[in-house]
Each structure stands twice: as structure tokens, then as C-alpha cells.
Length: 301
Image (cartoon, rainbow, N blue to C red):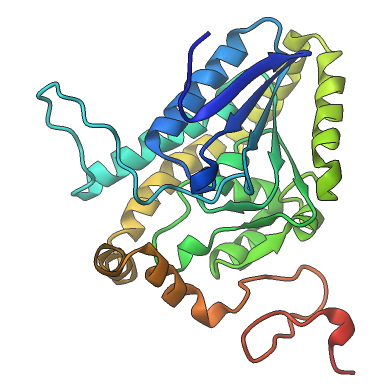
């Protein structure tokens, strides 16, 4: 079995458990991590004993996004490689990243995302390629990076929660609790955090009782239906659209600020006007002077 540096891989009881294992970075996605993930997913798909894959994160979060500080290990082979200088280089690198994540969609066997803590930006790109998403009630899900860093490089949002909620969340970068994400269909369901693992493992148990070839048959016809609705084409266009968004003044300014002041100050400046950055699915979004949502039982009559 291959050895991995950025993930944990375990096969047991008819399932492969793959754990993103960079807890000190809240499992931020580097190219090295996603290529290990890609290889592990194809290994699970090839393993006759595996019926499904459970994808989760170690530490306090599922995945807090793309790693904006890491770069690919340099290869001392004399080849001049793409560094994202021009539009085509940028689009090429985004597409390479997304091809690795899209293995979850392309592989034959079903996958379950087990989401706790933060599932932000690139973490949502990863999770939304899974077949089924189950999260804790207190999970924090959203894409605040779209406020000034680019466009979502995959657009599975549209196929999960429809155009209006996709626009509401991606046009503002606001986030949802796991409980609210379940209400709009962004995830299948949410449960209390102390019940999350049991909920996911219980579903994996049920899949383990089904012939894996039967599971593959039923997954793939549904995914073909999504492809007929343009899902795969839209993912390709989304990657190019993200590269286009990187040419905007807002994106150029924020990446310049990150280079000169660091990531923390840039994110604080970006998010300051948005308060807690939280959207509410049901009821009015009444906010206090700091921009934080007011609990519905504390709203004025």
C-alpha cells in the first residue's frame, strides 16, 4: 500500500477512510495533498474490498480552504514549468488542481464527506464533489474568499442548492451553519457533532451490505444525468472563470496586500464589514452594530 505524507488511509469493514492530515493548517489544500488524495481515491476504487469512501479531516476542521502559502516542490529536472504568470498558466494550474479533486465525482464508488468545524473555500470545492455530505450542526460552510480573491473554481453549488441560494452565498461570501446548509440541500443532513461519526459510519455500514458493483452502477447513472445537465462542462468553465477573476483589480490588490502585509491582515480587512459573515435561511437577517446576526428570540417586536 502506498505511504502518504498529507493524508491518512485506512481500509476496514468495506470502506476506505481517507483523512486530510494537516491539522496545523486546518487541512488546507496544497497540490501535494490533493495529488495524494487523488491517488488514494483511485486506490480505493480499485480495491475490491472497498464499497465506499469516507472523507474527513483531522483536528478542528474538515478543510479551511486552499493553502495560499504552499507551493509545489521544485523538481530538479531542468524543465521550465508553469507558475501562473499569464491567464493560460493560471487556468492550467486551476484545472490541474480541480482534476484531482474531481476524482471523487469520476470514481465509480460512492463517497461520503464527514464535515465538522470549518469547511471553507477550497474545502467546499472538495466536499461538493462527494456524493453525500453529512455535517455537524455547528459546522461553518461558505466561500468568503470570493469577496475579493477570485471566483469559485468548481460550480457544484448550483447542483446542490439551486441558483438563488448559490447566488446568495457566492455573491456575498457569507457562510451557513451546518444546520442551515441542510435546510437548503447544500448538504444531505446535519447532526449534533457528537453524533457525526456514528451517523456517517452507519451509512457506510449500509453501503457495505451492497455489492460494490451495484453501488457503482447506481452512482454512475445519476452522475451521467448531472453531466447531461452540463455539470462537467461547467466545471471546466468555472476554472477558466476563476483565472479571469484573478485579473480583476480587487484580486490584484488583495494578493499584493498578502505579499506585503501577510495573509492575516488581508483577511481581516476583507471581512471586517461583514460582521460574523453568517447568512440565515429562515427568518429575517437582523444584525447588530457590528454586523453580527441577532438571535431570533432577541429581535425587537
